[in-house]
Length: 64
Image 1 (cartoon, one colour):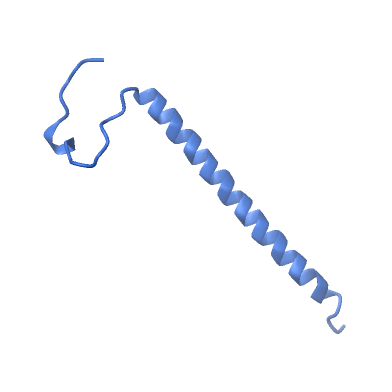
Image 2 (image 1 turned 30 degrees about the vertical axis):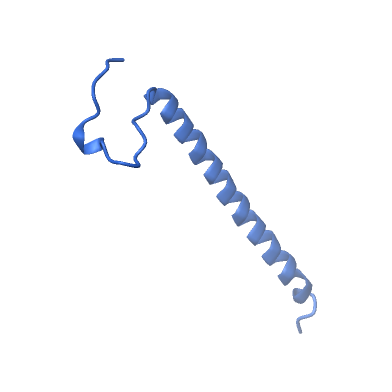
């Protein structure tokens, strides 16, 4: 990798420096996105199961 200076538009205080290894950065981003997707799917399944369990008891008591 060459030692190019940071372009002026990217040299903002508080902004982290660009990644040294773009491949590792992309892999880390992909893994983070997968973890977020799995967490979201898990939350959706949890809400669905709680809803079904709460409705399940009342379905047996409804009038015919």
